[in-house]
Image 1: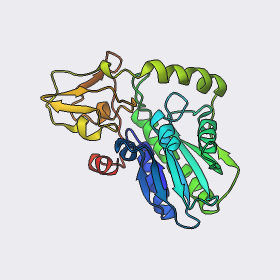
Image 2: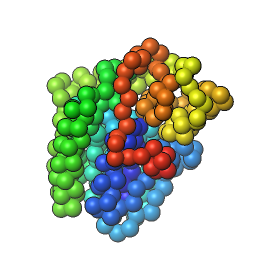
Image 3: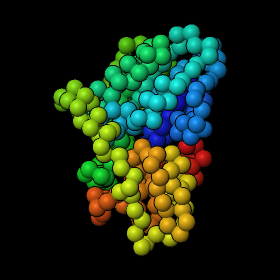
Length: 263
């Protein structure tokens, strides 16, 4: 069973690739959280592999992923092989340690962990990669996924092939909490006059936080995944002034219909 969360398709692509090679079922974390259930309960088959695939937000796992794990109940869990994959634009800090500790509190041991560099999408800080860099990262990600699939197939334990970057304790221990507390502000989202009211943003929102009546309106339940910004077909959505004149990115291997259906 592969649990995944994705904002612009990078983690969905990785999760689908791993699910294909392992034969495991894909389970959307956002879909589970949107049910409002107090418990995320799943029945495991004997020897079933358990995976968590998610992006890295300011050198930590998205809050929605950690909340999902806090409410997770795995029936018939008998020390199954468990892995985690964090996609990122560069490095993940101590993100994998956060996942390991969160799972440990549920008495689930994280056997292995991996990071995969993918094209940048957090345009609130910085911009998307050039097409050349984007293609290079996507090609390199394919090779990384081959190695990850091999390690998972072999049930390799204690393998943590991750890029923490410099000063991971600072990135995850100090900057990430600041991001979680102060950076997520749905009131900064707006649609300019180019908006055509198509409703795409409402369909791709991972938190069911957008309602479109002529123009989109945002509620307070937001993960800052930026799916609404990147999937807007006319680039009408902005986050304050920080995303103006910036590029847009969605994983080229994941169609918008696929993203909507899988999330």
